[in-house]
Amino acid sequence: MAREDRKRKQDNDDTADDGERRGRRDKRPKEEKPAPPLPSEIRNKEKRSEVYAKLKREKKAQKRKLGRERIQAAQRAAELGEQVPEKQVPRTIENTREPDETVCRPDDQELFAGNDADEFNAVLKQVVTPKVLITTCRFNSGRGPAFIKELMQVIPNAQYVNRGTYDLKKVVEYANNREFTSVMVVHTNRREPDALLIINLPEGPTAHFKLSKLVLRKDIKNHGNPTSHKPELVLNNFTTRLGHRVGRMIQSLFPQDPNFRGRRVVTFHNQRDYIFFRHHRYVFEEKEKKVVSKDKKGKTSETKTEKHVNCRLQECGPRFTLKLITLQHGAFDTKSGEYEWVHKPDLDTSRRRFFL
Image (cartoon, rainbow, N blue to C red):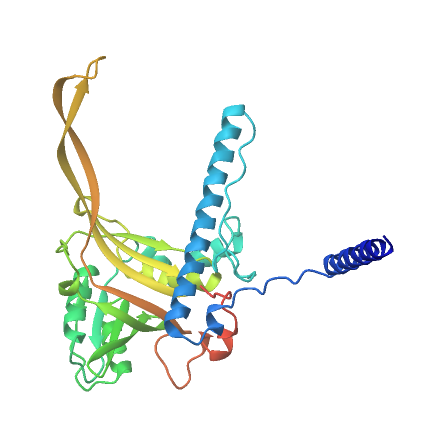
């Protein structure tokens, strides 16, 4: 009996020790699982691309889920007659740009007074008909002649004059004597047009643009051929004082009485200080569409043909991008000319600072 009691006591002690050990284990803080490694931390290329694709899929699914929830919340609010939540506006570089004091306002009387006294007023009020002289640099080749030919079809009343070996000041004097309102010089480098100089006559100003991403008409798929009608002009997003001045300078190249019968549109769209040029014509097409009417039982009773008029755009070319480099007071003068604005590398310190 004594042996059995000792044995039972020993077993009870063992179970108590086990319970204490378990309790101690439970009290220990649970170790968290390590976070999955980032794709940039994985050295194996296949594994890295696999993890990146998985993260991208998850992010896309999360975005779709949030979008569906927003749509459902808006529908629910509309059904209950409550106020629909405001649509979220994505943050872009344009709507988060740095504040600029020179942005034009619609009630700026000083701006309107300046417009009545600037160099472009006579052309824009149709007192003078715009007449543009187009020339080249001294050594012109490659795509330069083809680009000038298409520019002359874009700008009405444009004439080409061969530069030869004359200085640009002589060309400006020649244009002044023959009552041209603007001179446009296409500069080529390594057989490729790379700059555009626009000189307003007789008193300036002179604008120097960098020209890039030139696409001629023959390289545009399904392009159209422009007519000789005067085009409509669209100027987008020239918001600052400098942009307003550059926009009026571009506007003075074109007549202010467009011929709408020609259905031609010339667009200069400014975005992040890059001016994108496009030339379109809009086409109206009449198409027949079959409409099948069904009765209450869902059987087709009759088919009718209805005529619909569709409108589409057809690009005529050319297509290019401009970036303002300098704006100079007066006609072209590299030695003693004063500059209104010069682009410098120091101005490009912020991605959210724009000047046009």
